[in-house]
Amino acid sequence: MLHSIFCTFLCCFLTVSLSAQSFNQRITQDDASLKLVGSINKEALSSEPFAAWFSSEWEAYQPDASIVASLQTQLSEYTITAFMGTWCGDSQREIPRFYKVLEAAAFPLDRLQLIALDNDRSQYKQSPGGEEEGLGIHRVPTFVVYKNHREIGRIVESPKTSLEADLLAIITSETYEPKYPEVTFIIQQLKNQGAASLHEPQPYVIAALKERAQDLRGMLTYSSVLLAAEEPEAAVAVATLATLVFPEEYYTFVNLGNKLQAVGKREAGIAAYEKALDLHPDDKNLQETIAVLKGAKAD
Image 1: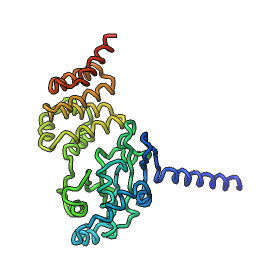
Image 2: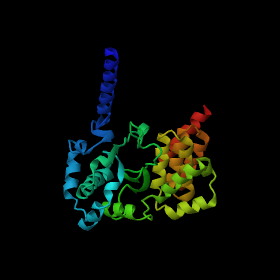
Image 3: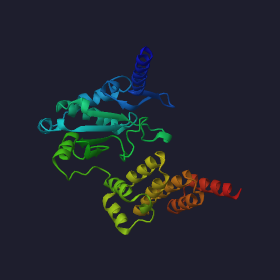
Image 4: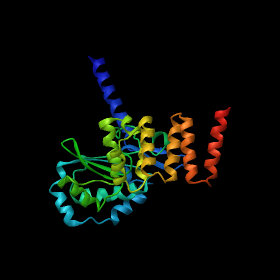
């Protein structure tokens, strides 16, 4: 009996200890600066070195009082998961403002989950706890709003109007569409039909992406996120799509070459780099990269 009680106590102690270790976790980067990863809270962001940007942005932001009043009567029945990077300038601007809005609207902060993602290449846009898995998080910050455990909308990278206005639009309308709608379209395509459907996409897919995409950043970032998440087929498919949507953009082919090299497709990677070089023939670094790859192939 005593042994059983001790084992139960030990298991509980270890669980609490492990949880404490993974909450507000700090990591020292190569340049000796600090970042947070995993589940965090306002207390962590209010401590140095993060307080320098968090406190100043929180104090400076003044939410629209009339919109906040509308949020105050409705927002508390929702839950929100926010993904950010303490290394990210957009997060450093929007996360303090988001807290200011929620606090002004008397939103219960125990209904907010804040996840700090890594920016290391091997853990790109990932959390140690994997909270981002399956959610298509590609830009930070991203604020995902849920009702009854179902996502009803999200703000990606920055609001279209303001954080408070976008939040109100999400909870009162079914027409809110976040930034990077082309990535939202790709995420749905991957969920519904898989990566294979993107390798030889139907014309309507290309047309839909061209209609939605304002620049190439969204697809290039998402392809890198997929590669880091060990989804190589999807990463290459999205990188290929970018070249079809932006065929005159040199860097779409560089990005595709990088993804193909990363998954071991050297010949195809060289071909992508050569297409990039056709668009940017004076790129000495690219010339050298192609020469090295061809030399290694010959050896």
